[in-house]
Image 1 (cartoon, helix red, strand yellow):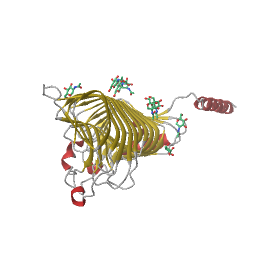
Image 2 (cartoon, rainbow, N blue to C red; image 1 turned 90 degrees about the vertical axis):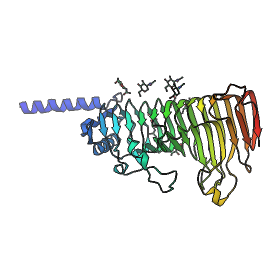
Image 3 (tube, rainbow, N blue to C red; image 1 turned 30 degrees about the vertical axis):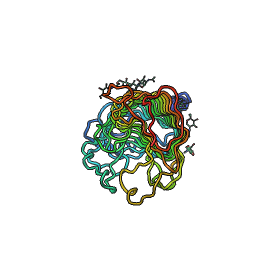
Image 4 (cartoon, helix red, strand yellow; image 1 turned 45 degrees about the vertical axis):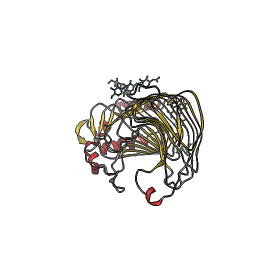
Length: 405
Ligand SMILES: *[C@@H]1O[C@H](CO)[C@@H](O)[C@H](O)[C@H]1NC(C)=O
Ligand SMILES: *[C@@H]1O[C@H](CO)[C@@H](O)[C@H](O)[C@H]1NC(C)=O
Ligand SMILES: *[C@@H]1O[C@H](CO)[C@@H](O)[C@H](O)[C@H]1NC(C)=O
Ligand SMILES: *[C@@H]1O[C@H](CO)[C@@H](O)[C@H](O)[C@H]1NC(C)=O
Ligand SMILES: *[C@@H]1O[C@H](CO)[C@@H](O)[C@H](O)[C@H]1NC(C)=O
Ligand SMILES: *[C@@H]1O[C@H](CO)[C@@H](O)[C@H](O)[C@H]1NC(C)=O
Ligand SMILES: *[C@@H]1O[C@H](CO)[C@@H](O)[C@H](O)[C@H]1NC(C)=O
Ligand SMILES: *[C@@H]1O[C@H](CO)[C@@H](O)[C@H](O)[C@H]1NC(C)=O
């Protein structure tokens, strides 16, 4: 008799629990990596634990949260692949530490997200790529078959997602890679590597649309932001860049099947001590005929920048150009507005617009440009050099004299 009663009680309790758990107001289900055997002791290899956490969170219906607490978590190459059953919040408060030997990562991106919608990554944590030991192995400037060193974090075929708050440190190659990503916000992110670290691009974007990058500091050894073929509707605001090679579109035109780059807005930016600021580069010897258009650069401060404004349609840092002599770039640049660009240039040619002879730049508007050649006191010592440019100037113009050749 007593047995039956307690059995009945148990059943009631279960029903009650079921009712509570299925209430729609319940928060996300939390997956703390510690509960999957991960240890933030700076020694344990957590690759397997992280892979399992992802599998569990991704296959859970109802929103889930993956949580990495404070601590140092050694992590090998991981792939986080969807589609997942619902939204995933990935909160990183600890440090993820890459193997210092690049061969131990075994993939081109250390932490790689693919085929996912509704992912948000946030937290106070750091992705430490430990690139110091890999940088000397990079000979890409002289060797076209150079070893592919892994990037820190990548997103491919990811929509409606975001990254907020985290830091990427000392990647072996680039820090963040985006390919075929749509509707994505990057905000309050910090990207750091030494100015001398080779090919450590901050954020690399290709074949993607509707991305926002804001409130972010990038100091690295290559482009702060590199914008590649097929990128549209990209909004970059309140970003500081330095050291680094600036915010760079391209290089474009080298390969067949490249796509247009359209609707780029870059505003409220500080370039501090960078080699370049605003830069568009297209290959002299170009295989694709594409259009680069509807760009706005506004409210941009240059501090000791070597080449503040540079459109280079004769880009060819290494062969085949000299050998093949394919001639002028076939990339059409048009509808580019540069407004309120000010500060100091480290070289005399502060504005350098070298456009294609076959496809001259069209509708380039320069409004309120005030760039001074650093260290010179004479009035208007900086110069502008322009080739094959159609457009207009308005407002204050320093360099005042546009030299056409
Ligand atoms: C993403 O989340 C939003 C809001 O919950 C939802 O409306 C949308 O359908 C989700 N998108 C995808 C592709 O899962
Ligand atoms: C960041 O760290 C602070 C203090 O350690 C903590 O209170 C806060 O919740 C963390 N923020 C996030 C988004 O994890
Ligand atoms: C992501 O967005 C793109 C562009 O809107 C769309 O073509 C693609 O189907 C979306 N992918 C998924 C998995 O929802
Ligand atoms: C991006 O941010 C904007 C506003 O800042 C917000 O409306 C939008 O929902 C965010 N998108 C994603 C995918 O997080
Ligand atoms: C930005 O991120 C840092 C941690 O990386 C955090 O401490 C700070 O509160 C965040 N700021 C905003 C405005 O979210
Ligand atoms: C980017 O920000 C603008 C406003 O600054 C907002 O209208 C837009 O929805 C955002 N884009 C995304 C992908 O969230
Ligand atoms: C610009 O970004 C910085 C962080 O990089 C932040 O502290 C500041 O509040 C942002 N300013 C605006 C106007 O959003
Ligand atoms: C520019 O960079 C220098 C050297 O890192 C630093 O001392 C200075 O404070 C920076 N200036 C601004 C305005 O950020």
